[in-house]
Amino acid sequence: MNKYSNRRQKLYKELANNSALILFSGCEIKKSADGFYDFDVNKNFFYLTGIKQEGSILVVTKIKNIVKETILTSPYDAHKEIWTGRRLKPENVREITRINEYKTTDEFNALLQTLKGNVKTVYLDLEPGIFTHTGLLVSNFREEIINTVNAKVENVYPLIVRLRMVKDEEEIALIRESIALTKKALDFAISKVKPGAYEYEVAAAFEYKIKAAHGVLGFSTIAATGDNAVILHYPDLNTKLEAGELLLLDLGGHNNMYTADISRTVPVNGKFTPLQITIYEIVLACNKAVIDFIKPGKTIADLQNYTREFLKERLVKAKLMDKDEDISNYYYHGVSHHLGLDTHDPADRALPLEKGNVITVEPGLYFAKYGIGVRIEDNVLVTEKGSENLSISIPKEIKEIIS
Ligand SMILES: [Mn+2]
Image (cartoon, rainbow, N blue to C red; front, top):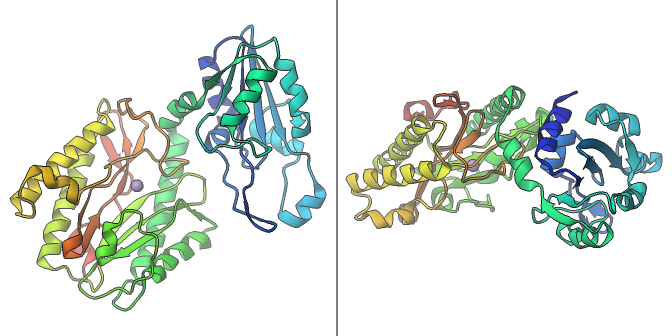
């Protein structure tokens, strides 16, 4: 047994008797001529197998309550290997997955035929945008299953997601490592913040430190100065930083598949204006209050309501807003999402939080008319009685970020 086989055993308990599960790692998507986008595995597949190679398949049957697992990858191809990099051999696949029964994907259709008459239900990951080994959308593959296997199709996605929502000790340790790496890279990026520098230079400094640790980005780095910061997923990064502005950074990286997702907002010339201080302090107080508010039993919707109420009250008190209804003009996103293998880790948001959940806490305020956007984002573990801020060591107090 290893962690992947442990996770699979938990999932199999949830599957109906006389059923099959077919899960795909995905396939490469063409970018141009003979070039492909970097392949990113379906994280549900990775979570259960540890395999990251495109074109791989997990086939499981549960018949008369006996579970049989088969793992399939594309046939080992020495020629492909000398062009595009190392490929998994059958022995590697067995070792990683702890599944003994190995086949190549050439044998998939024959395997599918054996399901006919033996299973009543086939589970697929029907999340939109997931591909089979041949490049078919899984949602389209569903028809083929109904016709060839003569079984009904169920979506396994919610079952896997419920497992992924609760992180074990090892996963939490990996997230801690990713936060430490992100902190180091963020420190370096902030050392490049000064009037006259460009947003893309600050982002490049962050990305250099991540890559120098043999890491990758969890998502596209956001570096947004002045009123660019009111655009939540600001993509351009082409503006010169000016003295007197705040720079909003939202970034994360990892070298272990589990990403961090951190936001900090810093003054370009090391000094806040009084208005910037007022807004920053409200967001900071909100960030801390939400982290304190978290405990098992609360839902993410509870956190969002709490955040909106908190910000409403403080903005009215500071005379930055006249009436409560205006809050959506200045705060217009969610305060939390789950974090893990995916930056926006999939979750059943109706479920109350429980021990082992890892979520972000990221209140923000955005005043286009003043050219100010502030977001302060931490990564928080839900504990038995409350929460632990995993990114507490990344500076966010005003006295820590002024010069
Ligand atoms: Mn986030």
